[in-house]
Length: 297
Image 1 (cartoon, helix red, strand yellow):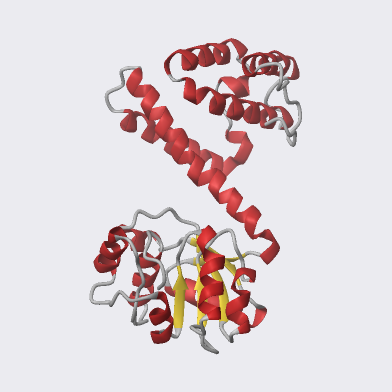
Image 2 (cartoon, helix red, strand yellow):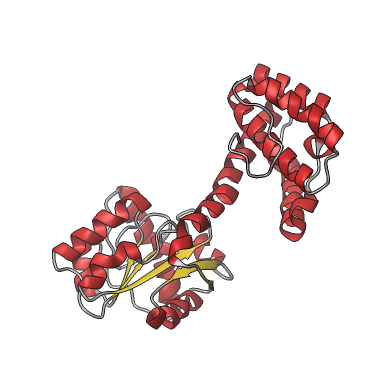
């Protein structure tokens, strides 16, 4: 494994449970070394080139922006051997980024776990039933799917050209959710709520479940109802107590209004007033949106 961030050690530990034998790991920071020691005890920490020299299956678990340079460097130095499985876990890239390794005889696989990681042993348990975005040459598809299943995951085939869109969808849903929840908890604390996590837990759990089951039909709240006065009051309070949240609130309110209007949940006469409020709060440079694919969001 090259890169002992939050993802790599959990995947390597899962493969170990399935009968594979971890032989080497590469990590630079103290935190990486500690993670590797916690999840892969007794596995030596060596250089990336030494990892490839000792391995038949190599996991490249580095940040997206670092991946192309790493692959190019490993190939140029002759570290990649013919027949060696070279697996990366980036959501953004397919197997094209592994072209230098392929030219050196490596067998390229892209296996991206659709999961958020903590860098602790609990991550291994969370891989059970986790979907993986899988991209590989047709002749390696079965090998890729087998590795995912061995880690307890569910393979989902993603075309090479669709990888950036696939990854954007996951980031939109998961990464932005963390920001929204953190901001909501801060606002509740300012409102005097002593345990915002306990208040939000059941509400957000129900909202997520409803959204996954019903999609846009699960929309509720003042924007979906067209309560323009309530939305204006929200924005006024946010400007007073947490001005940094206003832009995000307005952007999500416009997106919610567009979706509610497109699906017939928001009455056009109420939508006009609501979108007028949102446009006024945003400023004259950004007028109201009336479609689901407008650029002004």
